[in-house]
Image (cartoon, rainbow, N blue to C red):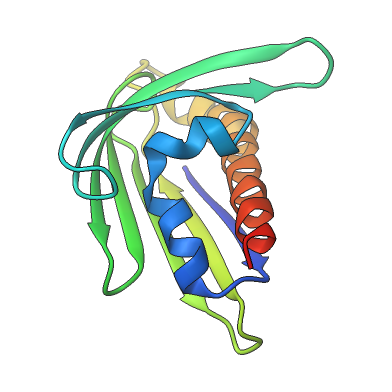
Length: 155
């Protein structure tokens, strides 16, 4: 399973970057995040984080999600990498890229790659047909939109 979410943000990469790395602050700026707890490492840097979010489906239906990830922050390249350690998505690799765009803004891309849960016969199908396009994309697209809203408002 591979999902790619991309958004052009009308803010300089230096403005967007702190919002991409200060994950402990996400529940305050992204309404679909329930909590983010740093388990290891300094705020904004490498370590281990536990994250929980809602996957909204409209109306009162919100599906709770939870995972723990090792996070690596490469400020020079403006990339953040995650490896999911726990939760249904254990083993998933995630890569965030914050790249300058010619118009002075930036393009932010989130790539999720995963072989799916270790469920006999249906793990890969569940990942490709439901978990990736419904849950991963649903949360990642909201995360990008929320970061854009905050970054563009802080120009």
